[in-house]
Image (cartoon, rainbow, N blue to C red; front, side):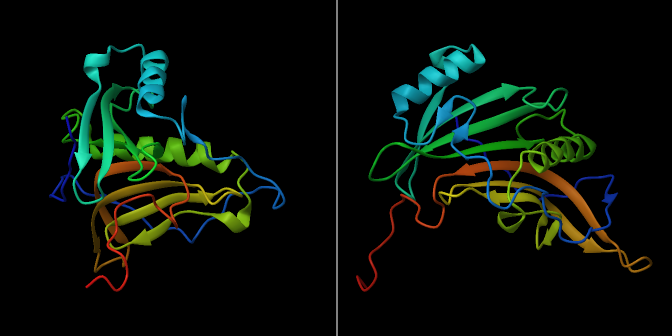
Length: 213
């Protein structure tokens, strides 16, 4: 099973004042390592990740779906999980395996009404705030973390990298408009994405060599 989402109108819209760019407080000389999601660590094989999923979430092998990203030529394991954030609804978790190494390089966790029709914009905001607060207290160095940054399609709630270049990213996505009366940004949230990536500057995905065309 693969999970997709698209931008569409959600009412009621929620008015949000975009706060100034924000940074986590931490000792600049240290910081946590970003190694994957829960028991699934970067570098694991599909078999190891399947075992970690079953052990961590107590689900059967049949609940884990295998697919392929035809553009990146990567293999993907997907599973739908309830209440990763307590009371936050169901989430789709996708584990991505590298094109050349065939080992875990990325994990994406997605909340949206397309995955769980009971999820509301308020729940997306609450999930996002809970996760943002969690990562803000993890101790990422201030020069490698940021958050509350407006984007074309939502808000970057949090982003950080570790000393090895691995990254964690939290994005609340939706349609952004301006309120002409208050000049505040208006977000209609439609999805919350939490992504963990191993060395995203050098992703292990299929890319045409430079100069090949």
